[in-house]
Amino acid sequence: MSDKNLKLRIEELKTKAKGLTAEQIIGLAYQEFGARLNFASSLGEEDQVITDMISKTAPHIEVFTLDTGRLFLETYELLAKTQKRYPMTYKVYYPDTQAVEEMVQMKGINLFYESIENRKMCCGVRKVEPLKRALANVDAWLCGLRRAQSVTRSTVEAFEWDEANQKIKINPLVDWSLDQVHEYIKKNKVDVNSLHAQGFLSISCSSCTRAVKPGEDIRAGRWWWEQPEQKECGLHNNPRKKK
Image (tube, rainbow, N blue to C red):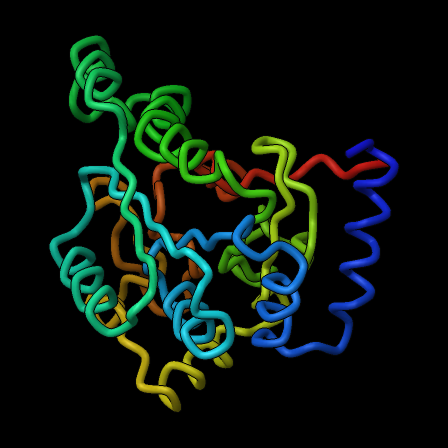
């Protein structure tokens, strides 16, 4: 598809999405892309909400998650519970073993604490490359991004172009507040990571996630040794807008 046609399609989808609920955006996405659409779940609260919505709205959408090899035990427990609860296609992608071994041999097991470059290398091996494999056969992917999550996500849109992966990215909860997420979880009895009750608001690898203090930013516990504007792993860098 040419850049011009791609821009027109995204603008058309944005127009169709205006005024729709999150569930309706998911339904629209499935109507537009069918089997060429999947959903990337990090098993966070937003993603658990979307998984529940997909099960009710478009259960044929493939759901996948990335196992970096350094997740919390509580995350694996939630993954097992989620797979049992929702009778959908639920895939788990892993990093390339040789790439991990070479990285650790060259940089050390905890390389990410030493520099931003090292941290991005680790995220690249453990997250970005597996994501590319997960997206290889689709045209669009669903995510749980919200504008209110961080400064790096303040310009997220319901439908946007993902330059890094050359796909259309769809964010059904883009306008939701955290309170709305929690309201849905309570109303629908959605399973969430038990670490949330211990002050962990945004959860990823155990080595790069800590609990946050009352009043701290929602993503303050992720890569806490870095500045807020640097806190992306490469999966959700701000897309380059099509002109």
